[in-house]
Amino acid sequence: IWVFFSLFDELTEKGITPSVHTYGALINGFCKAGQMEAADILVSEMQSKGINLNPVIFNTLIDGFCNKGMIDEALNQQDIMVKKGFKADVFAYNTIASGLCKLKRHEEAKKLLLTMAERGVAPNTVSFTTLIDIHCKEGNYVEAKRVLSEMEKKGEKPNTVTYNALIDGYIKKGKMKEAYRLKDEMEDKGLMADVYTFTSLILGECLVGKVDEALKLFNEMPQKGLARSIVTFTAMISGLSKEGRSDEAFRLYDEMIEAG
RNA sequence: UUCAUACCAACAG
Image 1 (cartoon, rainbow, N blue to C red):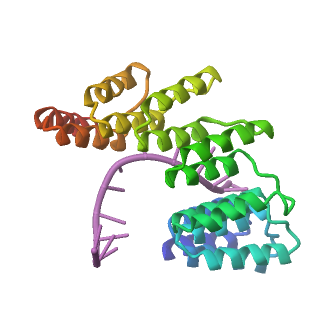
Image 2 (image 1 turned 30 degrees about the horizontal axis):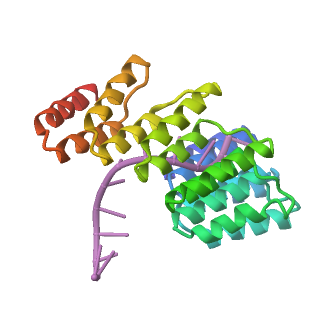
């Protein structure tokens, strides 16, 4: 980090002034790495150079603090943003809601997502998807499905992430038929099932003890041009081993290592 | 330049 800052200072001493976007990208990098102190330094630097902060920068900081579980500091940033004359936008709300979710503060997250409209910020696809995901994680796929209809009624289009969140809610409850139905539904809408969709379905089949069905999905992925992730492999491997099929599990393990 | 989805871990029970 200190190497970075000295190089960065050198650049600016040579009269190269980074743009807001450059700062934004750097701040985002530090936020993603959890280096909020470094992000803060860049923000101060921008201000001392008279570069105006924008809502994106604030949202980036809010996300960084949320991912560290520092909701209070995130809210503080939102406060500063508002005091600077920016409105808390849909990104800010979505980010804080998902931050609350990570801390298992589901009720507060739901309340935020349900009241943002009254506060003049229209929920978008991400907002609804977050809400769907919360209901699913609480095991309430019925309510989650209702939110899907609601968002469509309001003209917000569900995307692959929306369906994936919903499908995961169904498989966790062993509702495989309905999960496949949702997959068909998304494909009918031109949304392609991705590695998340398949991994959830594989996990679901394992949970209901249909490991062969899971294997079918697992083998279908490469044929569809989908790369299986480490998560896909571990789900499949643990499904096999729970059924006592350790030889197949080990074979997949080796395959996974070879594939990198 | 910013937000949402899959496996797994921990104290306690």
